[in-house]
Image (cartoon, rainbow, N blue to C red; front, side):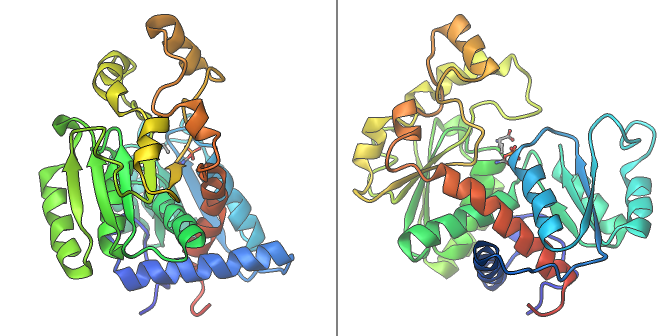
Length: 331
Ligand code: CP
Ligand code: NVA
């Protein structure tokens, strides 16, 4: 098994052994970074970072990882390139493939990152699409393993909109790694039935149990990890807020949700999170709907069980592993 020259587009493409390999190298590179040991073995390589949506963690993780590996990164923001407006994805991919050793893409449809991979001919990495967020899942799995010493057999309960990138990718990642997964939300927010079917087939092989639960009082029972994400994702219409607040407020992660989970359970969130009034959107929702928080209370977010900043740090180490394995044969 080798990940050399491989794309990293969605969790479904990966075998559990490949996921293990990314996690092994991430842990190795994390240790090197902590010890201050140089690991700039990709000197002379160049990566293009295309961001059609905003980012803090993913962009910084790619840029810092590239610098640590000795690479050069070129950041392309949504406004200052020709992508999509004056030049097709196919032509863009062919151009970038002539100049870069790898490409990262954050943006809209999964088909865009798949097309970049197809036409560029260089390893292409998904930094988030509407449908999937695979680099986040590697960071989450590394964080779970660091905390519990294992992944298989644990239970992750996901509260919120399980139809979007995070719900989808966590379900696939859990199924592949033999972790149990519960989506806790109204039925209309369950993942796509075709994806559920694929995950059930994977789960039958790995021993993972998938549950779809509409009762917020039941979702976290027996959970080792309680996970949530924003109720309205990047690129969705701002008008969606009102309906989401109505539909998903019963699924806010609060102290009661955490109390029903296992005693040693952790709280996770891919971030950014609406847990207080420290954001523009948070203050807007306070003015419109009187909310002090949304998907998670500040008590849980800032509480002892929260590992959200370990998770955020692990974005760096796992993204570094993705680039290192794609561009170096044998680590
Ligand atoms: N979790 C995550 O992808 O964060 P950013 O949007 O800041 O990259
Ligand atoms: N579902 C969120 C994830 C952010 C990391 C979004 O797409 O905006």
